[in-house]
Amino acid sequence: MLRGALRPVIAQTGRHCTISKPYSHTIKGKEQAGAIAASLRRFSQAGGPVTMIFRQYVVVVKVVVKVVIVVIVVVEVMVVMVVEVMVVMVVEVMVEVMVVVMVVMEVVVVVMEVVVVVMEVVVVVEVVKLFDRDSCTYTYLLADPNTKEAVLVDPVIELAERDAKLVKEMGLSLKYVMNTHVHADHITGSGLLKKLVPGCRSLISQVSGATADVHVHHGEVVTFGKQQLEVRRTPGHTYGCVTYVCHNEKFALTGDALLIRGCGRTDFQEGSSETCISPVHSQILSLPDTFALYPAHDYVGQTVTSVAEEKTLNPRLTKSKEEFITIMSNLGLAYPRKIDVSLPANKVCGLYNLPEDLAAKLADK
Ligand SMILES: N[C@@H](CCC(=O)N[C@@H](CSS)C(=O)NCC(=O)O)C(=O)O
Image 1 (spheres, rainbow, N blue to C red):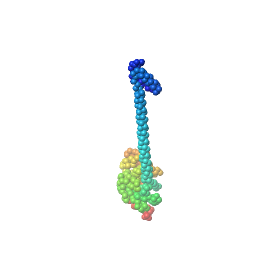
Image 2 (image 1 turned 120 degrees about the horizontal axis):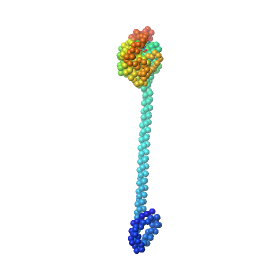
Image 3 (image 1 turned 90 degrees about the horizontal axis):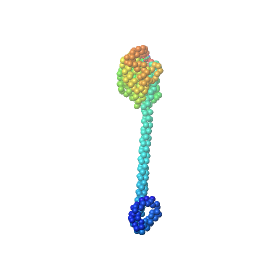
Image 4 (image 1 turned 180 degrees about the vertical axis):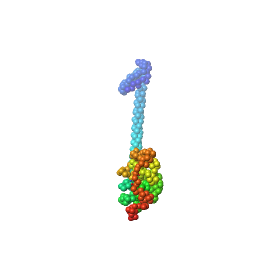
């Protein structure tokens, strides 16, 4: 279609024909254009002043169109190439990033696996509970399974051989034989165990006033293998009472300062109901609720409690100081049967003024 292509035809008055306005026609194809051109040519030869420039005009338009098409094709090809190159580069970068992320994740997984294995191997403390039916005393054997180093807390002299046998059977290296306080109801096994298990050392708080190889103070840490027990003063039952806290494994050995649903009596050995309740709250019941609490005695068969339980259910320690003092002055407990032999013996790790059978046992070793 070449609509308007003849507009520039110049029309002037001729001899045979007058074209009074610009010729405007739609030409379809070369044949029609040729026919019109021929008729105009005849008209011109007849004297009509016609200038035919439409052919050139069509040629120019065709060339321009072809150039434009070529340019479009070239641009199209270039754009496709550039896009392809960019897509390839982006995909390559994404693949590389994903590879790096996967490598990092694998490293993190390996590190976490190592941490879990190390924690399993290092952090666990074996707690073995031993019981003396006569005095209702709990003795605790704590061991680091990694290094095999162990400590024995609150042993009873009559059962020292049982404890020494267990230590040997378990292949443990007994570092300390220790007490939470100077006991009034039984003679400690510390002295005899030092003989039965050579190399172990006796340990008690400085403020207890008892002799021992090692004296500890409030805030100090007792170590065995990779394990630690923090020493916390909890006076009240006796002046020298301490609690041993194992933060790693979230438990505490409370001695007689806190018993399950009760607490140690305060009517002898510099005991004091006035000073008892405050340290029990600040040093034991201030631990996280989930901490397990292991007492030195239980008279009704209970074995373990927790901070949460005792904070809410202990019938003595949940009371006000005044109510607590009243309760403690009315316990009506009988004087401990063995107090007269226990106290002097325990002042020297169970090595003084022993009953005949125990003295003989000790002499044999
Ligand atoms: N009957 C026992 C002694 C019982 C006793 O008095 N236990 C003490 C801890 S050992 S000194 C205690 O504090 N008890 C508190 C309680 O509420 O029971 C014996 O004769 O050995």
